Length: 343
Ligand SMILES: [Zn+2]
Ligand SMILES: [Zn+2]
Image (cartoon, rainbow, N blue to C red; front, top):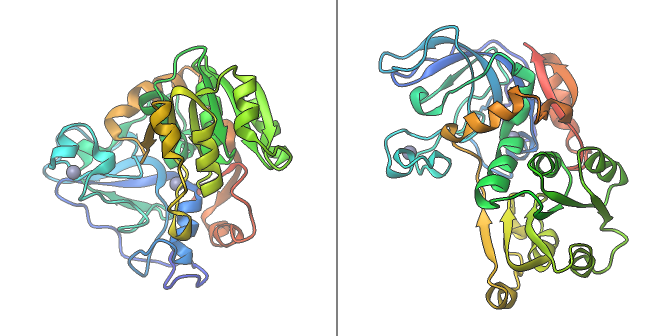
């Protein structure tokens, strides 16, 4: 599935097979999630080389490996993070490929996974083995949203059983955070303006839900419910309002996690730095999860303790993908995940 220009309807067409990099691998795509980031790129909000094949939330089978690859063979079932590191810089070597300055992203810096085949660079760094118990659909639904939420909650948030976590915005990332924190013993407050999203959050384990369209002082409500403020709070939507609410609802020494993207005119929220100082708050940005951090998360999924596939509301064919991508024009950020399962 290719688009030749921004906002021009994508079409299915035959293209040349990807060339396998010496340090990389070519995968036969088994499933690929459809994400709002693909839509942002197609709309031109986030410039990409044209023409472009979208798709960055993928799982599949290795069909070719480059001559320098040591750890992978044809037939291996794998997934990849949406940020692929170069494998040689100081950040990649330190286990932080998610901020690699020479990163590649399928579907953004090069052809992605809305295709039968996709090439991945630096396979030894970026490929993640899938346990037999984890399906391609579940792995594709980890995508950027579930994996990013997992790392935000566990690495930046350092969530412990009994900690209060506030989740502002219950789309894919927010609902993932609700599920993950609940399974790890956190007490979750979910905030959204959609009753359907809040219902889903409650089903996934949120102890308390707040309709932000009816609450004029969210920080005060959350402070009251938690008797002093949330230990950890996530802006999972990405807007000046949710970012500020997230910081203001924290208890002393609490941690704000910025996961929702803040693009363009939204990119400078008026964060109350006076509170950051007087309450000694910590503020983290979160940009995906490196391949080396996947195994503990995959073990929880293989055990059925975490069930990302519950967030998948639609399985579609590649033929249906152009219309589904364009339909994100009308859809809000709230809702489940669509996964392409037939190529
Ligand atoms: Zn690197
Ligand atoms: Zn994504």
